[in-house]
Length: 296
Image 1 (tube, rainbow, N blue to C red):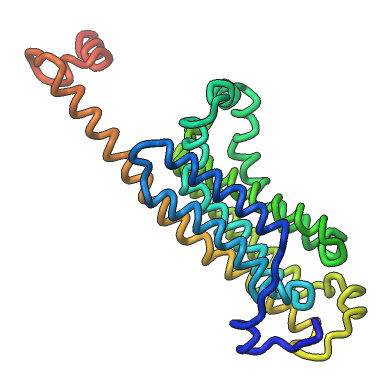
Image 2 (image 1 turned 90 degrees about the vertical axis):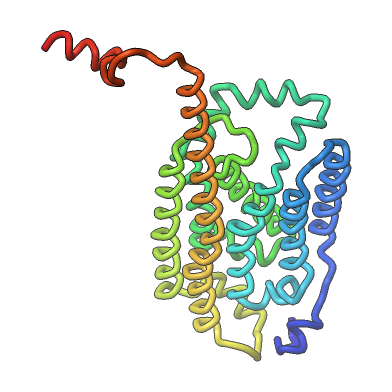
């Protein structure tokens, strides 16, 4: 891209990323058709899912898609959004619940979801790796320069980021059915680890050598920040932007935790109301405590 990036270009530079547009259309149309078949499907879920698809178009067809081969920091924005924002919105749309409610092979999917393989693949340590490793794999190996030179590899990497992020948010938010029921504190622990790792990657890129230096030197961009400054800006986006992008998830997770606790409290109260009232003090009717008092 030889045209310098300006405010006018920010709002006026557009392109068409055919693979991204086709991907969004297939998922969007499929979701809407399935939602029409489920009476009372929440509108908020539809809005969240379509919002996630909209972020893909924004990243690939706006000025971010036009300048992603010329500026390191633009690529950093794409990575943060595709890994942390797009999957969160898609997961909030509960696409798996919708699939189970409408797909003819739903019973097969339920059987797979209850299996040992699904439980192993959604183990918290595996989920942590899926969230943390992709940025390191992208930026600390030749894969980053390969995405700049090969559009097919670039598309695969973007899809991989979305899939890794979706698995994380799916298993942590549990809007859809999941193979495991880990405590919400596990999710907060993974989020804390992600914050530390973001900082580590940011420092490595900030202080380390220029990534894909051969490609950028061939590009010979004569405008904008120099290669070192460009990478420092991108490192800051990956570090701080990744943490900021995770804040909505922490809020959603905390809200989910509170709702689950309230629901469990109501269930316990209902069970206690339904049980016949026993004579004596409450600890005398508890099997373990009653046995202890008898021994005394």
